[in-house]
Length: 228
Length: 209
Image 1 (spheres, rainbow over the protein chains, first blue to last red):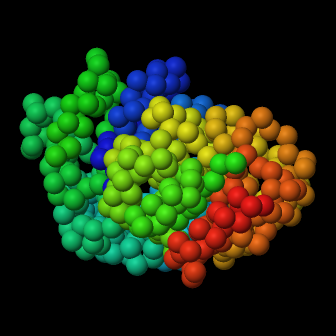
Image 2: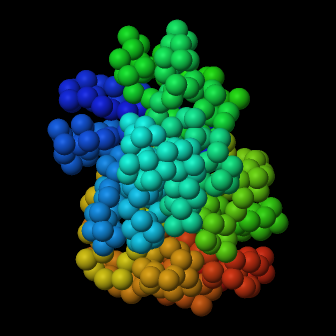
Image 3: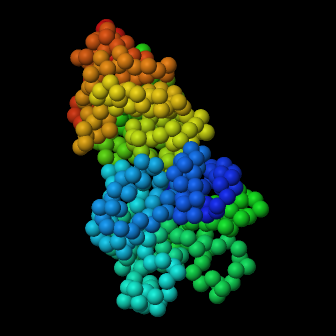
């Protein structure tokens, strides 16, 4: 296990800004997260440009299709060697099983339930209004179908860790470092220390670092709290 | 000629290698390999080697780069051998640790040599037998057709690897005379177990070749 725990989300449409951030932060991150906004603005060329500066990428494209399509997509994705990538657990057993690659460079994480869905929506689309139950079930299925880990909200970390054991990778977004944010204001957010304590392996943090006046200082301060 | 023996797991073998003027010993961090070493044992060997005239090489296969960085720092490694599909960006990222990189290249035909041009930042190449699908990335006791190396174009120093043993070392010296050789199964009594008598015998054959 690496001692570096922070994945910095590169969600921006300003390539030069991103590139500078990567140069400044590259020695202190676990990885940089590239998602839809980056990928559909800057494409593979942008990806390769960032990769050449720091080959530690979490390519978060949340694949979801029939097993063969996902498998072939991942075969191509493996060639650009991200450390982590994502598929939807709701793609089903066969999709997850067929996603396993011989190339172990890239770990595959399952996306559980989108954090934007409330209990009414999960009732409507998954016939279950207890989100925590649903997420636990999804985590269990992800492990059973040989995924390497899961992406989940901070409040689900504890249950998932219990359900999936020590080796399953847990990545969580929803991290806030500003102590002024009231708990009741952001029910699904958590401090980095707490998330790690509960069993997360890696934390995805975007704006609290990228929009800071001194991003490196903020990152280093988070790292120092996480290394015991 | 530089000699490297790969897959060392204990101090006794390390000392035998040093007595035989072996230059490098390889520590394999690859769980699927019968020669895999734990971080704890590697730390013992690495510390011991600092007082000896032999240098440790950490051998990895597509290792998560963050984990590899931790191992480099923990063991104070100065030499890294990469046996997977690691690319130039991966290698460049390691250069900040002041490590020398040995990149292994699997060979089964002439065109396999062309990848050497992709690796500008490596310090040494290591040419090895190209494993079949179900074989290990190295240490399969098998050789490739060494004549292929006649077509090699590189200014970087390189090691020959793959099935080298006391029976073919004379031919290697006569026909190829590489910068270095890398042995593993050729000095083992059984899979993954090095034997000091076989090492002594090999070195004596090498000297008399």
